[in-house]
Length: 349
Image (cartoon, rainbow, N blue to C red; front, side, top):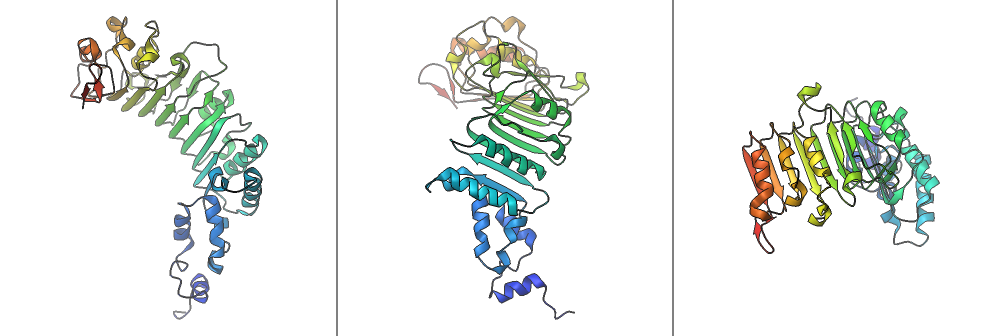
């Protein structure tokens, strides 16, 4: 009947003139999206309308930092997370974020990751304060909805790449930061965006760069540090010649400055550039002429490159590094120099 009030609005009316609580669950869950998990649970005290609403929120953001100001931080976090997962009833998650500080219990973390991934999140994010060797960082059987993934300081073994090859059928965006990568090859038929930030391999004796085989890859970002050979990832099998689309955007950063390339025999970054021969837009950060010395005669032709940005690069020796690029980019239309050094104290905007 027209005069009837929906049950949810009736509950809101019983609590007084609460227009926020009168909103449908979907909109209230959208508000909860911006809250940490502990804050989401605390909304249960607002009114009867909110009492159980947190149980069905499609986003869980568990952050160790919410408990830092309390004694027995880890015990409180364990109790909270146990109750959270035991009472949460959403069948699927749009986002699952786990951000932990130091002194964590690996068995507990492993269980939290398992529970979170079992809810088939579309965008999981796991961040550790120190390297974490998860026994089950991801469950491929529950990854049918996974489109975006962020992992920070997580130990990734060979099983990760096997799952990446066939266990994530819709994964398009992957970001790895400071992870310990115990593998030599990444293969994904669906990956479009890949970001690798200072990811090394602490136990590998191989000096060969790792490779990325992703024919659909359109954006690639690499930040290398500590050991160029172990940090490098070569993009292979990408481009029209390999039956895939050309790489649209690539960014390479040398995070430790020019001293990183004092050894002229280190050709790793040159090899990385060679693997990006089909890229159309390229960003280079903190490169120097030392990076390219002794390889200028073999420098790859970047035939598809139309836009080049060089940031914080060393422009000494008569702009040697710039001249090398200009000689090998026949289709270049735009070049930008940002905070590049000509000599000590000189900057070019």
